[in-house]
Length: 182
Image (cartoon, rainbow, N blue to C red; front, side, top):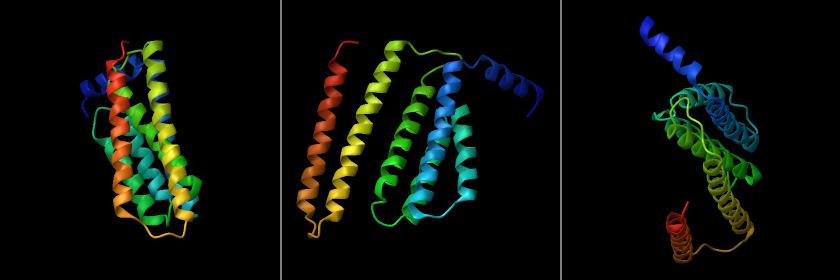
């Protein structure tokens, strides 16, 4: 890194708003929270993964408009699928909510200039939409837990219909939210 690039990077860090620093800290914390949830679910510590995810999360928080955030999600999901048996109990819900907040924060950060500040209305709308996603995630997790405890054969057609209804509901909610005046 030459001195001009280093100076530009330092200037950018100094211009970063306190709101952006908060979003960046939240991105790192939620990605680490997802890794720790996987460790709690499989009862095995993963220090190398924690270092990798933390490094990638810091890089994605600094440059939220890069593909590094995708790498964070891929590593966490891969680790979960490779190490956790079954639905994972409440740790699955915690990891899912951490990833939801991580994604929302990175997307919000990417839409702002480095020194930019969000209006209160934007923050409220962002929180409302993220909470709606979190609520839907919680409901889906609850149904997974209920269905996992049943001793019944699965029904592929019924599952496909249920997923289609959920997708239609999500599209309806999304279309109505776009039609509302801001």
